[in-house]
Image 1 (cartoon, rainbow, N blue to C red):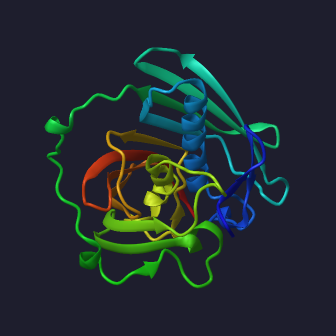
Image 2: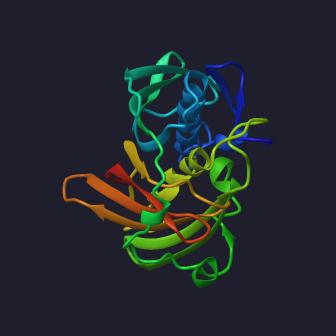
Length: 262
């Protein structure tokens, strides 16, 4: 398993075995797929312009599962929704078996030097040593993507927890991927960091993920402080602050969950 994906052409990619999901061994895990989409946005940007617009917000709508036993091929279609000199909106439709599986909209923003203004009022992220011994994200019986993630994790109460995550594989074989796209390739697992209830009682997959990123993360490890909330009518929300290896907050995500009792 050299990487999560292999590029076949400018707009076509092969899903590798390491992308298999945690709910079913036949379906792709959406986490690395979202990272691939972010990389597609940045690769298209670099082909069109040289001013280094940054992803500030990227919103993913997840249309359904991807059965990798039927097809391992993903096709990407990129469209400029709103062109601009300093801000633009880009759309990516990722297709599997001739049906859209993920539709993403990314706002790209021109960089300015604001190092003298940088900072955050957010609480600091506990270090890895404070979260206990390093352990795999899942049990020995796990497969695919979750078995390729290193993790330190701690939950202080139902619906709240911290974790440090590090993917063991590169996102794309033989290709440089930005720290932002690499981080976005694991953030979807936040849904399982501080579960509100035992997953044996209900499933709660997310139908979307929206990420706001205001700095490029540093280092290999990605820190999460995650809160999970369920409403009374089958909907839930997972929210996470994201930290880089130096402990600096660099963004946040939200995921809308569909909560279904077993």
